[in-house]
Length: 315
Image (tube, rainbow, N blue to C red; front, side, top):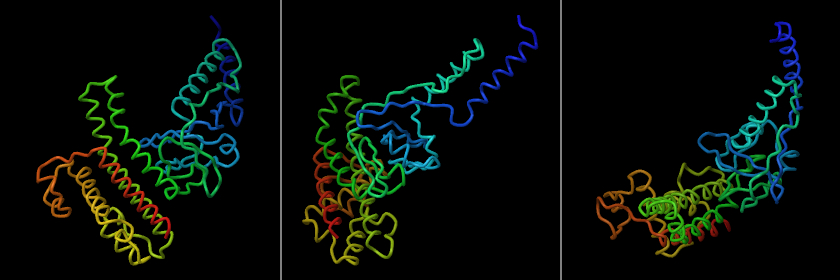
């Protein structure tokens, strides 16, 4: 058993070793994926979205003091965007090295861990403003470096992906049934389709608002583009064009119908009420019925919204 002085000397040596780690001496090596991208993750507890940033751009363009989440635009210091899994591996390796130092006197390694990035993501984007290259799953709305909104560029693609998902619900259901019951799989597919209605209308609202504010001296009213009648008046006053110019009567009715159905799904649990029937004249339902969203519904809605996006983009 060592003496108190031995313990004091060990504590002193340990303190000196820990103090030597201050500054930039600790290195975490992350191997990029095949596209040169490294993994990042939003630190916002309500988001935690995974994304990737080009390794060179992360080092040379992204600022240490601020990085943005492409999905929710959370802004935090860049160091906070290390993915949870990589952070855990780093902490475990650091803890092991510290314990080896305490128990055996081994030096605490400056280069503690080499981590491999996940396989490359499908969607590659380059910011029009700062040129940072990044990758996402699905759609992205903000540049991780400067926070520039890319809703205009990604809105059409987001709708395309929603249509693609709807067209593959049979395959999704079959896949889910391999690990879940048929009832559970059916519930999940139903949820996917219902959420697709909100995703389509939300994309149209976000795109329209940004585009409108780019060409109008007066900002658009809050959430005005979730209502086709209000949107019609705004576009007509601004550019003498509107949904009536861009869509057939049938297409405009589809847009009106699903903006109202989105409201029911989000605020009424999908249960039909008198207000909905009065607003839409929908003959397929009566008060108290539950909305049923089909694959065709999402494809039809998405196709109409793509047509609107194309028309607004040309203003």
